[in-house]
Length: 162
Image 1 (cartoon, rainbow, N blue to C red):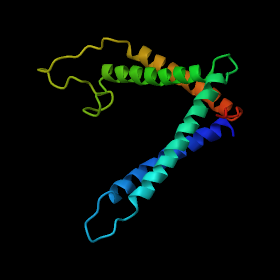
Image 2: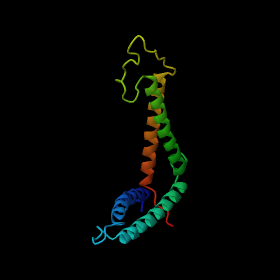
Image 3: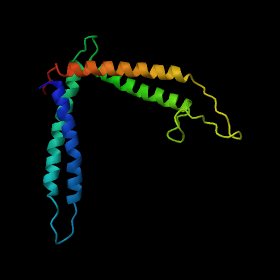
Image 4: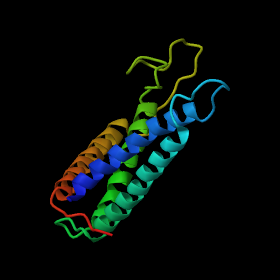
C-alpha cells in the first residue's frame, strides 16, 4: 500500500468514529419498556476495531514518514513540521496585518477608516502592513510548494509494515 492510500484510509477511519460515537451515545441509555435504537455494545466493539486499525495506520504512517526522504534530503517528518509552522506563520502574519489595517473581524468595512468621529481616538499603524502581506504571501507560496512535494512523495512511497 502506498503512503497516500494509508493517509486516505486514516482520514476515513477518523470520519467513521464520530457517527459511531453519536450512535453509541444515543443507545447507551433508553427508557424502560422500550428498545434502544441500536445495540450500544456492538457499537462500542465496532469503535474499538476502528480505533485499533487507526492506531496501526498511524504507527505505520509515522514510521514511513521518518524514513522517507524528499529530493532535498529532508525526511517527510521534518517537512511536515516545517509545513505546520509555515501554516501557523501565515495565519499569524495575516492576522497582524489585518489588525494593523483596521480589518477588525467584521466590526467595520475592509479598508474603512477606524476613526469615524472627531471625538474618537486616532489609531496609528505600528507595522508595515504591505511588508507583512508580502511576507505572508511568500510564506503561503512556500507552504504550497512544500505541500505539493510531500503529496507527490506520498504517492510514490510504500507504507512501512509493522
